[in-house]
Length: 131
Length: 407
Image (cartoon, rainbow over all chains, first blue to last red; front, top):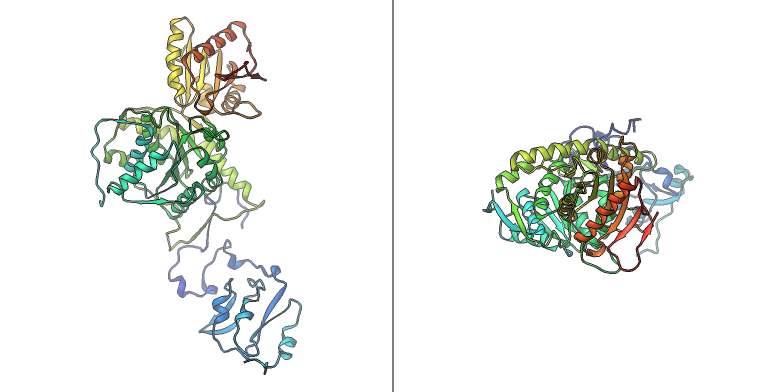
């Protein structure tokens, strides 16, 4: 926030989410919205996370379960296709992995420092014992 | 309009509660969220009946506690509605957390507080403990001494509170039972005149403005909290007083009833004065007139506004007086009385520094009798003659047993 004086902000414990007025917000992608600096969209909380989800598109069936269940709107889906995870807002809760129905899973949790490419190269095989 | 208007006589016989309920009806409040408690119950009861009888176009929400009542008011106010409720004593205590939310969020809400003692021991009668409990909560506090004033001050409270330069919630106090349940003649306004005085509610940053989304009730830590509080205090210290004066003037123009932040009676030449609130003001005025017949130049100062405290107006009212007694109807529990403190602050840097003493009285609805006040004025007169406060600074009036005095 700009370094303003005590009497230079709008009164009340209130903040505006967008610069100016908005129209058809549901039809506007997050990256195209004019968020203010007060919106958490522009703030990274990546350092809250201890483990991270890694997405392997080879097994994804685009069922959108992870997108629906993510409590922080951190699954990025475009035209009903999962394209990745918003790592600025993902807190590593692992719910996306829990709800993923594929075998093997298309999302798995790894330590924050694990290298994504080598994780994907060594992705678990299909579990033949699973019904 | 979808609701009916009510025909009122020029003077109606109303108690303070019904007068407040009528004022809320005439202001056409959008949301009343309430949890009734003695002695304020008839306010929301009366309002609910008006609603059932189609005299009101608004929502009446019965909630599960006073905490929920004020929370409902906060939500409705943030959403952009005219909002009011009523409570007393324990109810206010449960509500107190949310009072700070309302004022910090700068939401205009009118709370009718029918003053009652705080337990323990449990007591339903009038004293000012509840009023004092929330004096630092950032709300504007008016005090009605009679049913007429309980009616009038509601309109004034909405007008001040909802002003876009103010945007602070307001409490209208009245004494439990002595005002709330005592019927007197009340001069009324007709529905149109009354509503036009407060006007149609003008929302500000309301949550229901979908084109301009706002987040209400945000968190700020050490980086911004102080600035918000400083601004709220600044507005209370500098903006609210003039707005109250302006509103009192506007109200006088349509009703002929002129209020002042500090009401002075016979103070022009008074040498001794009693400064108090609520129904005690009327008793003190009667005694002051009788003291004058006995040769003591007595006056009375009634505090119409407790917050923001009218320091300059008090200083003006007491500019010629030689001794003043500040009466607090709440136990300070280990300190000087709050009004005594404020009056001392007001007079500390004044050109005239009268002899000042404080009295605790009337707890739990104990009567302040005329003979108490006669004794008080005589004591002040003795102080003037001695040129100093001849007693301890803090005394108790009307309590059993040996005299209690401190400081």
